[in-house]
Image (cartoon, rainbow, N blue to C red; front, side, top):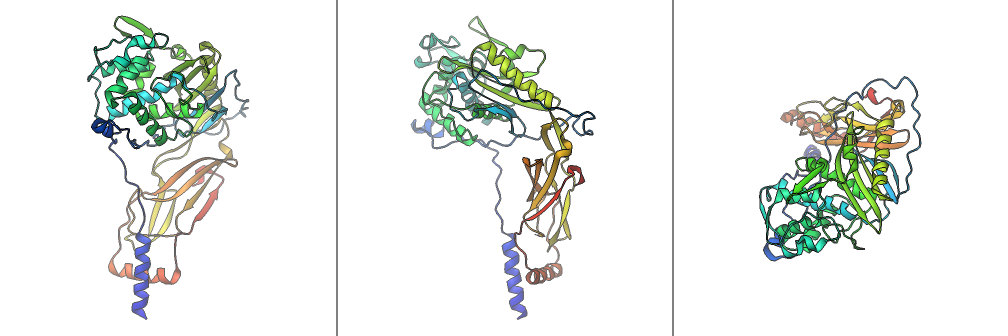
Length: 446
């Protein structure tokens, strides 16, 4: 009977130790590998879109505002759709028709430049590489649209073509880079759509690299804000190009069309304009203030001036009436739980990164925190950083954020006798992945 008990306990312990894990992907897969070999379209090459690092909040941990803050209604515009998004969490602050299908026009070039940027990041492309301009990228092919004024047969550096795409919005530069990397524009577009799926652009499809009108080249205000977020997050070396106000090539000086780069009342550092007669004037912008970063996207404004004014109003609304709040720091033990068969009797749980939230000003007292654990107790070994549960933060009844609760330390296996005793105890007391919940109204009481 004793042997049967021990065998059952050992089996239970083995099952408790089995768990899945996600492997970190450091290398960026080559989406053009198939095209280089056979000129066939790739079957889903993509890159990991890692979550943005938690912001370093500045001045967000003080007491509640001494005077009640009245949050006005968000601004309204004469435009088709818009979105104001918190960069760090991806949460939408305010929006209208955010998922309505639109034609992005030259906002398409954010994805074109993103694909190029990922190749630079992977080391398969370099800013000083030479590109020979093919006939279908000839500037004369785009006489009525934005162009960089490049000529067939000329050799141009990747860095110049990328600046031509981002600053001058050159359609010719887009085609030249697409052919250079994929052999054909169609092959490059297939990679753009592969990245779109990976980045979660659920209502977006690209049919060209420059954004000229095509029914099948569509997106939404929300997806374009997400696209801007991905450029900022994933391409820190290339993103500064979006803040450059001008670029001169072949003796021709062209200005960035993003008016807000000249606005001294805001710290706008990007990102892209677009225009089509079929939709109107589009603009995605990003700005920073007091540790915050916001992304605004306006689609279908009536003029260049109005799209800038609308973006400005959205950004000011976010900065004036919202604030960063960091109720819980990283690496601080928030709770502990019992551990079986370990060299320690318990494991401390906390957050891997600071929990920073964008909340309406003066609403700290309306924040509540709850946690969910995978089990009432855990079994060694446990690696530092292992996810053992989740922490949820709500503003009133609305979920603001969920963050993984991780082990703050390693817990190794215990000695033979302690492990044997714990196996017996686990057999008699039971166990399993029972979800455990606890809640507190005071976010800092944890």
